[in-house]
Image (cartoon, rainbow, N blue to C red; front, side, top):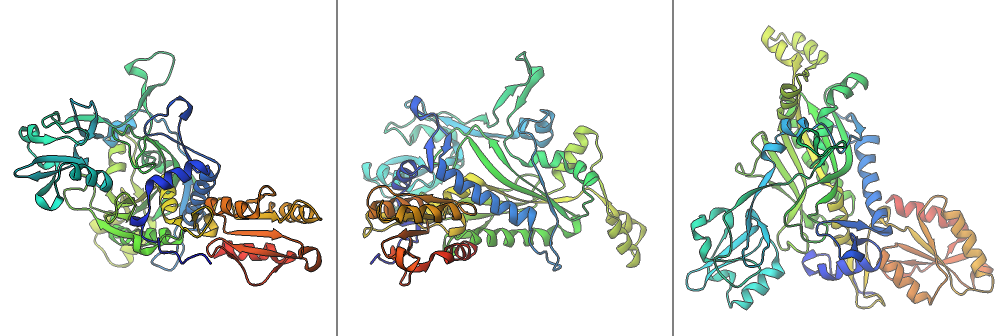
Length: 520
């Protein structure tokens, strides 16, 4: 009997073992691996692609096709968009990315490695020096400090941004034992640039987008003019973004090419606080709908010194990743962006971004408001609430949640995906490849594949086939055995218990059984 799952806390899970399983079973591969790979880029294998698409489709379903019920009891209105990765470069001047999308970096003259200044923490111990280590990297910190015979309790921990550069000569950088090798911080732009056209010159310089949001803002007026949307409404988009991260790390958590799921919610300024609170809780509810344990999720409000200069409020939905546990790391941000983006694009493009709100105008008149109040209510540049999450980061969260060690199983592990999101919904096995079993199994497979992603497998022992499905996260295996010829029923093996259900399932009920489980 398989043991109860005691591995619900990500702190008990090994990222090294998870990464190995992802490679072994076709979830995620290093990009360009046969040439030695390229840091910060990853390829999604067959199972990883299916998992990613399942998450994407659920987000799109919940955001665009069947959006949530708003505070007034009516469904909110959200439309979809797929904007170009490359836009006119003036876009990024208006948004502030060209001039301000950069991070202070420090270099190590000893190892030639580069680090983001705010990603280095320094342990200051009076009689043993100052030891730098990567932020949140628990395993690295433990090894580093053990080697130096230093405990985190022996001194004071500060972020490198809080230390005067004149003190850098005392700091031992993360990947060396020699003090004084860190340079003063320098700005490093995070956008990838390219050139559109035959001639490579500053005149035709373009950028790969660092976020999908600006494509939404550029199309705000087009949507208002063509889709008969009324305030408040949202525009949603899923797509690739690119950031030239200097220190990509923690598997697919921080990479240079990634996919985002973003929605910009446009609303009247007076209603922005209400909608900020609505989307904050709605997004947490959505993450829980993926099967993520509530204990591994939390909100974290940004401090005033963290907020972007245009932002009024921002909260992160955070997850307890194995590499941050017992702490948490960012999963999704819900930001109150005010009217900054539309105002900037209005000023730079000379295109009016104001919205005429007839319903608000009539309501203000009926309420006996003054002319000034009526004018302010009826014509304005909308405020924007932005729930923005990484699709590829969502894949990582579901991989971390699903990874369940179990020493009682042949594979030693199984992937406990919620059936709705499992890459393979079911497997169909003939117990042996004879006595009419393959024919029945093949018929069942052809029936189910019309509706579900299922797999037929007749090779190797039944135990090895179960083990493969455990590592793929397949919730159910239907086995056709000798009794099937007599009772027209199959054995149902449940992934989570590792055992067969007590009762055999009639062949004509397999479809309904699977449909019900996936819908849960």
